Image 1 (cartoon, one colour):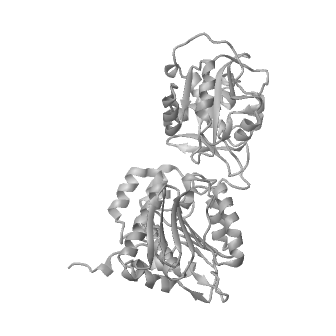
Image 2 (cartoon, one colour):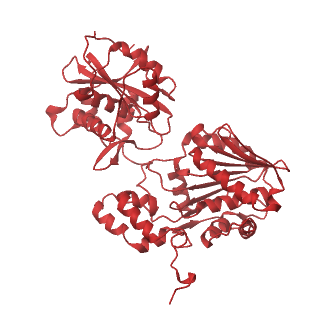
Image 3 (cartoon, one colour):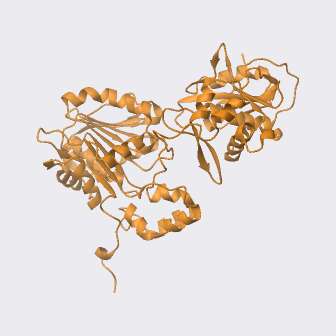
Length: 496
């Protein structure tokens, strides 16, 4: 006998963590009805988020200024966003709605989906004055003057983040700089309007990401924040990976963390994910967060202050050809150029390059290739870059580049550690000159798992470790003869 659709097992329709302000009214049911009129039929869990995220106070303002929804990928969070945006345009009369994503393609997909929904509903489509696309932006303008704009955050720091409703998709990638810009532009609206900010995402790869603050506030039940998290809590790195993988194979966990399982995700798909992703299955499918590396986390975790201080000698200078390493973090906020070579004191020498007292550790990436061309006068043994776009630009400018592989990155970190604080004291031969930007990075660095090894990562948002991987890449280049350019005589000189 064939089972009916009602007999099919479905994922949990209520989140593991759910905190929200109490409210006498909610526009959630009306929003769900409006979405259905556009052909968008919502799951119970999607209605749950809208009902409790759209509570209204007696004065007509939203009970939640911020709404945060954390659910693994492919469960249908996009439908919640679409329903909220449609309501903003055709129910709430919001003048400006901003839908932003970390990647351009995600913002573009949102635009295409909303346009499709509106065009399929004649009562909505007749109110559209125009759809527009161009210059990396898309949008919709109604005959009432209301506007819905789609942007990619990776194109800027958050300038222009203003509106009656702000949708922040891929919220795990949000930075402090972007959020400062957003709250600055939204502050006036909170007095004279009824703004609302929505966060949607999955647990971040960075254990010091800005959204950990949202998670902390949500679990504490902060006033005016609605927080919904289907994930299964925090990963415990103290449990051996093989034991964690056995736990991840429990199908009951899959159904608890994925409200769309049995609706738009199959068990077979989850099985394949587990076999492919291994430890990555926890954040991607079970919505589990890495342990937070925020306030109260001790400093000098990887290299002790004593070990670092012992390897400092301002008299150390480079002797011979340097190896240069260039590192750009994922948010491309800063770039650093590190140098490594033979020390006049014996052993190896590292420093961040610079001139006139200003280090080559600066905002953005536009300045880097021009500076690298200047540094070519030192006839470097190798130029190591761990960023495809920057490596492409450097090669187009005529520079010879060694593109760092993940293995090269790991090797550089190990060489740095062993040369400064490794277990073999005789192998501690790396000298540094006490540059504050490097001192701060070593003080605030933690380890990030890379397969069976590790790479550098910052302890929290107040720390920038950009100089540290740049020096590690340089040390890898200096210590790895197979990547060197042909040797030519060169005088010893400062990095001017």
